[in-house]
Image (cartoon, rainbow, N blue to C red):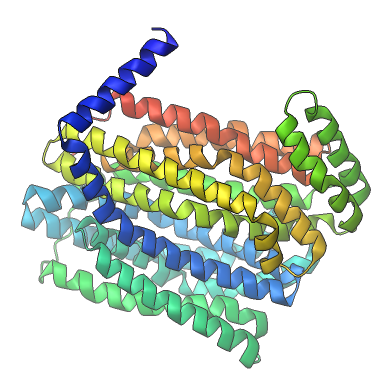
Length: 496
């Protein structure tokens, strides 16, 4: 089929959806579930930005340490995704299938399993955090701050991991507004305690981790009470339901763990950066190499190459690590709608699959994905136009600011593809088709992102610029593979 015929075919399908009057209902349902999730993502983003902002007011070493400690912390949290993802898919189906006993059994089974994994994660966090820092090749001036942060984070791992599963249960029951209120309370407490602990107590930078631990524990207590009410004193553990939960959830746990491990390896790559002289030369080489093919990218890079060459110091790795940690926080603002639509699609698809409304599920995911991509493009443009202002707000050191700007210019290229992948992957997860998304994620991370980032940044000695480009490339492949999987409709199957 020729390209223009494919375009006409897509146009006809869109016209049919509109003429059938279904598109409005898809938009309405998607928005009803998405806007509380968007608010939740915003509150969590506010927490993250407060951490990195306060760390940036202290020094670049603490700022980099917060980024590294957070990656290690969430690596352990990812253990719980095998339970949480499977729980959302299974519980959302049972919630709409009108099977009350099985519904309560699934909730109790998920909570007990999350408690067991919580113990594993907390013990692992205490025992292996220092080893992970060494594995990440964290510079000594960063590790000295990251290690005490991780020790405090490890204390709250047990509550945090169970809290993630509890939130998944509440979302599955369409209690998005309740989850939103709990996360809002947690965000306000976290931000307030951040300021109090860091600036008004002897804890100093350690207060960044302690405030997170305290706020998560409070949210855990509130969520536990709400989920307990759903059980209605039905405490029945089901091995068959656990198998169903793990069948859906283990690929998602692999995905999450894979991404977190990759994030840790990225800091290892950053820690292996050459000295400033090599980075300056490499930056000029990248600009020259790209000039024959991509004038837009050349302009972006050449505008910043001089400032990088002038301001970067001998601690190249520290500057790049601080810039990466900060750039990710800014980038996470753009992810907010995409993650909200991702989580909404898990619930929407799960509910519709439970009612065996497969065609409606497919169209709903497409509609949500379209909205997500449009919003993401708008936000990416806003960030590009205000990159310097945003970077200056979050760091007081000129070299770090310059590196953040370069990171943002490069990473924004992939944002629409990230939004498409997240929205569609959420739908596939809700349908229980997590093995395909796992395969695509592993391909993206371990065949494209990490090897290319290392090859460009270290082997070819293009420095941080090479790393940022390498990290961006894989997203294009993942979005295409995930979208093709949705269109194939191979996800239409029963898992219960």
